[in-house]
Image 1 (cartoon, rainbow, N blue to C red):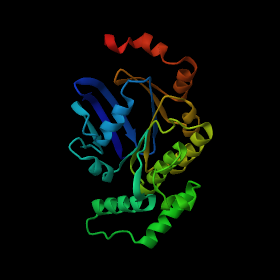
Image 2: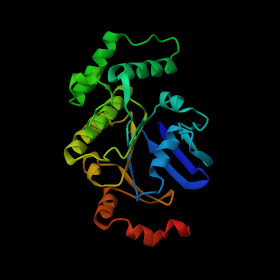
Image 3: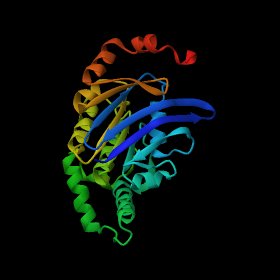
Image 4: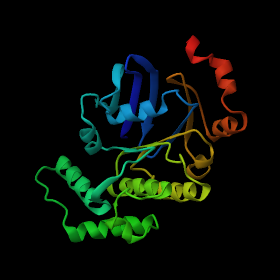
Amino acid sequence: MSKLEIKNLHVSLEDTHIIKGFNLSVKRGEVHAIMGPNATGKSTLAYTIMGHPKYEVSGGDIQVDGNSILEMAPDERSRAGIFLAFQYPVSIPGVTVANFLRTAVNAKRRYSDPSQKDISILEFRKLLKSKMDLLEMDYSFGGRYLNEGFSGGEKKRTEVLQLAVLEPSFAILDETDSGLDIDAIRIVSEGVNALKGPNMGVVVITHYQRILNYLQPDYVHVMYDGRIVESGGEELAVQLEEHGYDWVREKYGHPEAA
């Protein structure tokens, strides 16, 4: 079975050691939630998996199906089946959602088969509309410039639309619930639920249990001081929601003392 594996990962940013021996194994079809207080390395982990050049991997490995991806550029990692939904998606004026997605689909097709022709406009429109129907999105979204003038909820729904169209093997959702009201969280979660399944593994990075009420993860992990310190089921997320992270700090000490 296809697997994303992170092995004893160590990551630094500008000489600051942030990820400190992180381990995680995600199979297709599984949903993993990573929770933790601020400044514990959750977003650093997401960016490192995607290959952000600012983050330096000083130890360990990230593998997809047993093959290291550390030497791959971000676009190569994307074509290899990894998707990152940003916490703060950027706007790209002048580029419509439809054109952006068609370009991405063609890049993925050429990666899997260099002889494959670009997807036709007619075929792509059919694909895009089917995914919009799945996510209950208005077709007018396709003609709008990517994230320009979008509300927070619209930006996150557009990220889920990208996820639907590209159909990656592994999706990393970096605080997708950040800045969303409860209705927007429900809508975005329902979109992810419609897409998850045997062909896609999902890693949800979040502070709060509320999005997990909808996504119902198979595993919940607590990240603290750059590594996973606790793992369990949904009951662990409920415990964090009820009691916060003080018990984690008491059990594992303060990062400054680590």
